[in-house]
Image 1 (cartoon, rainbow, N blue to C red):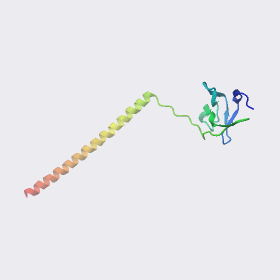
Image 2: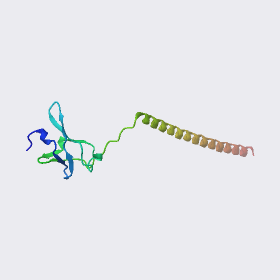
Image 3: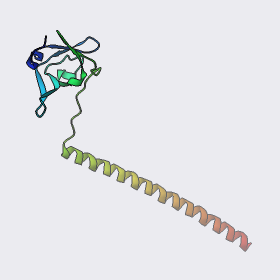
Image 4: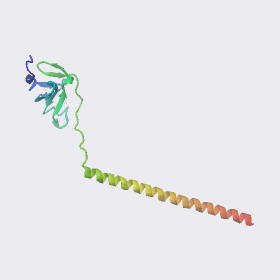
Length: 136
């Protein structure tokens, strides 16, 4: 029987599918209310958590506490968030994208100018042809 919160430390945690997540290494407690908000598992099962990175399991996910802790919810797999790129890399990437966009814009403008010149030549040819017909 659980007598003190510290009795939770060292207890095994299982998902609602019966898979062992790991053991509780610490508790995260809201300072103002002294309420346990999360169970800290420092070395979780790598089948559930990428690279066995420590996780804080929200206490609201706990279904029951007995000989073990049973969770009513746990994601199928917890991956690590991707790290944001360094500002200098982001700046370089922005410059590359801007340059590529400028190149595409210039290529589009060149194509439009070429099409316009072709159209002008066609119009000039038709005008010349019409003048020639009128003069005959």
